[in-house]
Length: 130
Image (cartoon, rainbow, N blue to C red):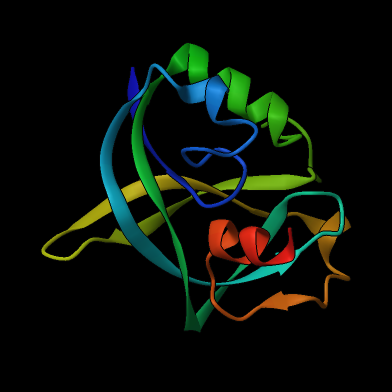
């Protein structure tokens, strides 16, 4: 089965975990969702749903094997009540169309995040910090 996956952090092109989805088809490079992005302090971001802000990212078509790999990276197991990240369906917006895709949002253990990334763009934010 194929899935659409919205990525906004270390899975984006040029980022440290992109190799995990390098064989996936990139559907759109400049898309966004409504949410707020936070720096976890551990070298990767997390997001929460928020209708007042946008998070920039990319959209990929992935298969079952890649989904299992990304689930492991994100600390997500469907049978657990609490995960590092929760996998949900969300509306993704491109310039001229919308998609429904999977995205990983902050789980309960990431509830205390306060370092909001105002731009909503992890790549831009990370490059400014180097």
